[in-house]
Amino acid sequence: MAIAPKTSLPAILTRLGAVYRLPEPLTDPFALILWENIGYLIDDDRRRALMSEFHARVGETPAAISAAGFETLLDIARRGGMRPEARVERWREIARLIEACGGDLAGALRDLPLAKARALLKRFPVIGDPGADKVLLFSGVAPRASLDSNGVRVLARLGYFPEQKSYDASYRAAIAVLSAEGVAGFEALRRAYRLLQAHGRALCKRGAPLCLGCSLDTVCAHAPVAAL
Image 1 (spheres, rainbow, N blue to C red):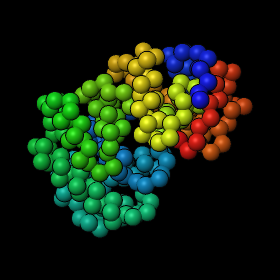
Image 2: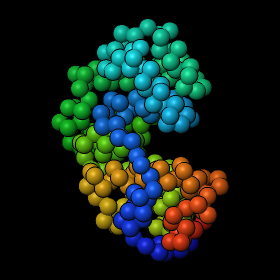
Image 3: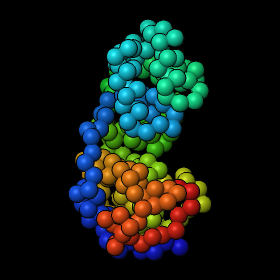
Image 4: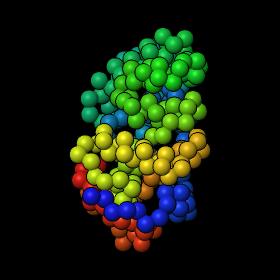
């Protein structure tokens, strides 16, 4: 059973906003999808480096991916972790899907009803419900609440929802917290996503949270969490 949180989520986000300086986020849906597929289990610094190399050597459009040679793509993919050949095929599948939308994924998403836009995004490699909502949110298509696993873990430990038996259930509970706490609209939802992610990565780590160095320690409910 979770312990009730000691302060409001907007107040928590204000505290985190004073701690973390965040880089500008990606807003193009193609770039957001490529970011998720550029590497496997790598940190953001390596992702940014690979994205930069990809843009320099391949290009910044789906057509450029389709035109690129396999060896060029594979050379980049090898620096992104295991199974590089599979990653090349994912990049090509991304290009194929966007070209089927006339080359304009952002326009296609805006022209579709929300449910169909989400369904289209979920056809892309590694994009499930959370990923689809993230793309819709950060690309400015729809203000869909979204969190990564770090954000879900932080909200659980703060006591905003009781521990769930599955990650999917925990994710749904965490998203419901955002609505219940009045976090809504593009700017607020993007800010919540990024600040909670940053805090989960820096201090509220999965295996060993660094509570003594945490600015939220005095207001954290320290709810028990397993493997979020």
